[in-house]
Amino acid sequence: MKIRKILFSFFSMLACISASQAGNTSSQPQMYVGVQAGYADTNFSKSTMIATPANGSVPITSASIGNHVFAGRAYGGYQFNDYLALEGGYLKPRNTRYTNINGGAVPNGFIKEYAVDLTGKVFLPMAAYIHLSPYVKAGVAYVKATSYGGITRNGASDFGYTFHPLLGAGIGYDIMQNVTMDVSWTTITKRNTSLPRIDMLFLGLTFHFTPDDLTTGGHNYGDVEGTDP
Image (tube, rainbow, N blue to C red; front, top):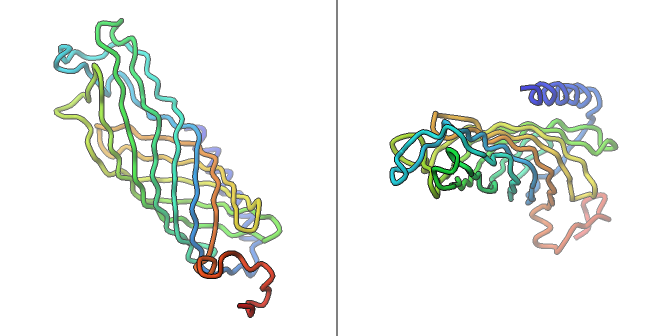
């Protein structure tokens, strides 16, 4: 896939820059929360689905499939140091719609999906003046998919709940001391023949805070030496 080759080359270049420019970067552990939104390809096709038994269980030979959809994700995590973080999130793409099925012989239908994910993130810390933080991530997604209307999964039962590997990469830019904007690519891979993979390209916004912020009421930006209460 061409976009994957481009992303691989881009992040390989960033890794080289990071290795040559990263200095003595160190930070205390941080918690963070954020949101992402953007494009998703749910990769459903005619062969994925058939007509429901009430509509004859016939194969879908033609249909308009809306599998290029908007998706959003909310997440939170804990960053242990400059290099490692653990993150959990909730993903919700818009429904994938099937219309004009078999020339209108089968009623329209749609698939509703959502996912809960748990991932580990590895950062490539760069010099502070660059304000960039490229990263890669890997984990697992718990995906629920259900079909509605005149279609159902081409199998013995509907999709239900399944676990899938998750892979991704991104790069963040610190627009403020505790706020990062990032662009990322993520894929929830196809683990079996029932549920297609989900490819996503997101723009995100993350707010960082430390445990001390919860007790002191905010960031103490003037505490350069770490001695102020």
